[in-house]
Amino acid sequence: MNHWYMLTLTGADRPGIVARITQALFEQGMNLGEASMLRLGGNFTIMMMVSGELDAGELEQALAPVAGELGLSLHIDPMEGGLHRHVVPNLMVRVSGADRAGIVARVTGVLAEHGFNIFDLESDVAGTAEQPVYLMQIAGIAAEPLETLEAALAPLREEGIEVNISPVETLVG
Amino acid sequence: MKPLPILTIPDERLKQVSEPVAEFDDELRAFVERLELTRRRGPAAVGIAAPQVGRFQRICIVDCSNTRKPVPNHGNLVLINPEITHWEGYEVGREGCLSVPDYTGNVIRATQIRLKAFDPHGEEREYEMEGFEARAVQHEIDHLDGILFIDRVVSRRTDLFKRKVYR
Image (cartoon, rainbow over all chains, first blue to last red; front, side, top):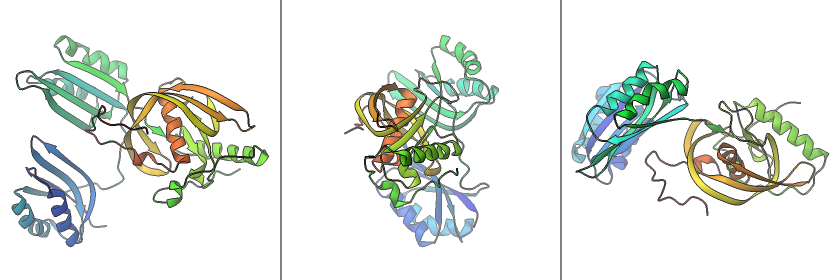
């Protein structure tokens, strides 16, 4: 197996980005691995594992024209790791509160102190421009019991940050 | 007794709709025993359905009595020709499957169900269940209809309230 590159592409959203980029990769004989593609604030963002015969320089050369036409910035990093390394989360933390500076740092700071390993964080700003509400869902692996994390996060409630922790029991059937 | 080999994707047979059981005999009960052995052999499976081992009959086993955090459950349930007669509420939960190695995803399921099924002796039984156990039953009955959880996975940003899941 050739080794993997992490490909990052971002730019103004429009139809056809995924099709054009993946077609260009296919034509170069590159394989795709795990990927996250999301629209954030009107931009389209791609983070994607790719592997194949090309090295980072050749890959950049192959993709630069398409990325340019689509108005996307392109970044390529060689990466360690590979497929089949999934970790199943055992805890979900949901946060909401009036949007203000520092919410994420406060919550994730407490989690980090307790050895919580985040591997999926999704956040958004809802509400209105006048009254924005910050929403965040964090999935990960807790090294300590739920009750310990709950107690550690409780003081945030007094600051108006709603934090709710629930175990994730993955059903296998 | 040896566990049965488990069919994994992309095996087309997992999409087959299973037939109702007509004979509640010793052969059926011996199969159920072997299916249970196979479930226990799997990595922490709370359920297993006959088509996962290549027998296309409406038979499944659900056992939520041994979860990390205890959940309401009816113990070890052998469900033959199961039928959900009522469902209520819905919630998202994470699922994996013996037939889908190395993948888990979020699926919307009803939170409360009523269920009719036969036991291995042909006695009809009724159950009311909720939460994790109800989810497990819905996951297994899907197998009997040739549906895998990957056919129902919802995206990270799925709006729970706009989606109608059950027909």
